[in-house]
Amino acid sequence: MFIDTHLHLVARDRITYPWLKDVAALDRDWTFQDYETTARRIGIEGVLHMEVDCAPTDIAAENTFVGELMAQPGSLMRGAISSARPESGDCEAFLDTLDLNIVKGIRRVLHVVPDDLSQGSLFRQNVRRIGKKGLPFDICVLQRQLPLARDLVDACPDTVFVLDHCGVPDIAGDGFADWAQSISALAKRPHVNAKISGITAYAKPDWTLETLRPYVEHIIESFGWDRVVWGSDSPVCTLNSSLDQWMAVTQALIAGASETERASLTHRNAQRIWSI
Image 1 (cartoon, rainbow, N blue to C red):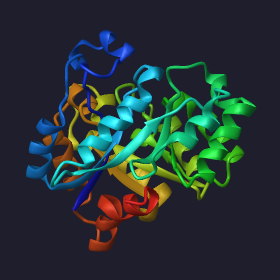
Image 2 (cartoon, rainbow, N blue to C red):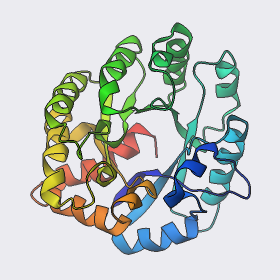
Image 3 (spheres, rainbow, N blue to C red):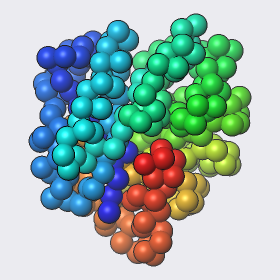
């Protein structure tokens, strides 16, 4: 059983995505029907929708969209990781509007904003409020920003964090050493988890299984099997692979793990962290 903790859907007829115009390969609709067809074939039995950095005015509409998908008979959809603006004075009121039957977590993409945004006192106060709501906070940063992530989690010791995409390692640029050092430091914080999701997107087009192995193995070694989860990052993963290929890579990389270890990564940790 796999729970995919990182699916992006694009529904341009009802939600606006300002950034999509700059990524031609992704600038189209990505439907849940198409995803489910592949997901059922490759062993995914549940999925969380990850916010797609839509226009701030459409955040509520995106969560409503996910709720509709959850309500479909036999749906694989288990909930939404909603966008939010912790830097805003309206964030506390926004959190109070959320339907926690739908919203299972929160994310604010940090690599598209100034580095100092996550270091502000209001931002951190609101991330602590997110934790008090019982919601995990996904951290989406570039490799060079991992020290900023460490500062944020240290300021919010009672909030559960999930580091997206293994911390976006610079695989194509062979940045392993610096990345590994930052990951080891971050993993010392017990309230931080790591998401092994779609890292083919950060490699060169001719990547192989062995290209990705050291990154995945270092994440597991650093965080342990009880603090890692799996995600597809579909459709972003399609920039350099396919959903099927990413699943095949994952299966190969964990082939030597015990049944308990595999279950922790593939679904049990996700069920615990997001109360699925």
